[in-house]
Length: 303
Image (tube, rainbow, N blue to C red; front, side, top):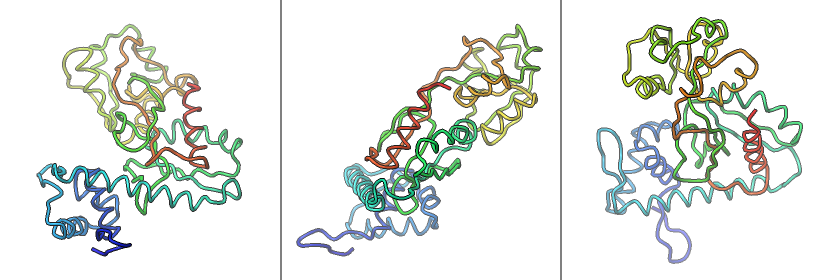
């Protein structure tokens, strides 16, 4: 560790602090290594070096992942806050031009919402903010909000995050949809009846929860599984079978008649999950705040 400033405790290298924060947040050296684009061994070595230097174990190592030791919880929280603050300060420095010049905001979002919701609305954003460009990183990976490879904003699906800044963006239940032609053949069907149909699954695996909730068991079904929600929705539009999807992702397709609900809204599966807009800290005035505000406004329109 290196000392810095008058009478201050020596600090680990910045990369070691980033490795600590990522390991604590993601729960494993492997996930932290993937996020940092280094080897798992490199992350583990950096963490061990800090532990040896301070003479204290920071993590309990378990087969399923890492758990911060009781003694390390406060320290790791301080590391996260410090990195977040440093990242925000650097972002402010880079945007010191204020309104002058062209500015870019990196937005990470799942491919499904990128293709089905975000991209069709970007022309509206650029008409309002011609000086800002949004670099859309459409990926299923959870991109970091702090560190050298951080993104400015992210749209994430799930429960409300318990750290950083977040706002609920798009809420909606899981709904069962199909092409209009397939729907006409299924008129009057009950949840139990559709078990004989081709069911299209994606990474959410919502069919299991849906059947368990509405018929009390998970049946054997003729199904196909696609890795992305956007692909599952495309397959449903082509009449291959029925898909189950978060309602915001199929809202436009239903409005345009490319998809229809197979069952009434009584059979929508409510969950505590939704799309959230997240960042390391509350966006300050500038391009990032403008993008976050526009996303929330566009989502509130319900279109």
